Length: 424
Image (cartoon, rainbow, N blue to C red; front, side, top):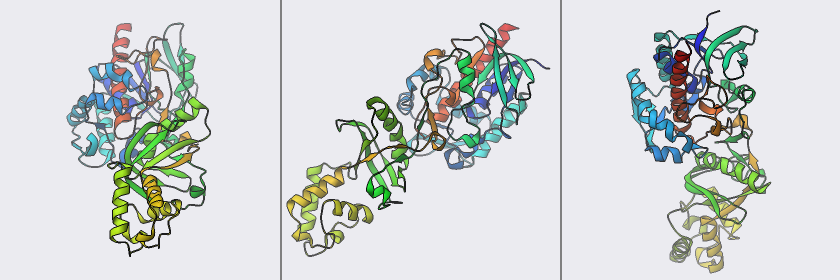
């Protein structure tokens, strides 16, 4: 059996980048994946358009990777988001910038990104084996030795890059395969949890589907600590579902809900919706007061029509004990204050998230304390490298996780090739 300098396990964004980097550094590379085709996660990312990276400054990107993003500072000093852009443009994939720095292929097709990577693998003569599950990674006392395939075939190598993803989006092949191999090498796996995931709630209004399907635009959504102070606030869109809440603001808040439940041993976490982030409560009260007085003969629901979506308005009016058909002039100051408070601060509880297999991103993974930040090398075994979501690094959606995957993949592949060369 042919011996390889570098074996990359996992054909997602990180594994593809690692295999290309190793090939470009002169290594004989085997890229192996248990699925029937490479780049499945890439092909569905960004709603099928593939958000390849984000063009925000490095400090901003790190802020958008709340799960150990700071670990990536060293990696970014070697290969960063601008290098990712150049890399793809050199492969003939033209990119364009959209809102919040998100970079997409001009073609608007994720497949063009996948095809460019596969073409590059082919140019570098990287051996590719799909439909080939890896059963185990073999180590000596100090280093990587070989991999064992599901059919018990042993393939020897000087270096292994484990790039098999986390446990989210399992239909793309991310089913947590890498954790036992890392553990066997002496690595710590931090608690795994879903991030970028919808939240669930057992509030009566959710169970009764009162707001199901309702979207709120550009609201401030906050996760509150047990004392009622915000742990995090995101100003984005959200939607009420039959199980709870979802949408961009919710996905970003989700990991803070999970962490709060764990930290304070909570069964429920308080959330806050501010429908008017640009105004304070007093200002809002004055505006409501003026509107209800000036158009006092009309019904409250008609006077305030368009302030917030109609279903949300009727819902808040009911909570403030205001008859939506009552004339504006008849509403007491106390009730107007109650309504302005609810518009600024509607609070309700969530009781968890959907399961990790419904999450976009896995929180937790191989502890970054045991990884060399400039090379992605294991501190436990020579010739062992990790990249992508198998590591305990997680960011928001918007090109941040894929940036982390490409950057760590690049470093892992480059350094695995260097290590293998020195072993010859």
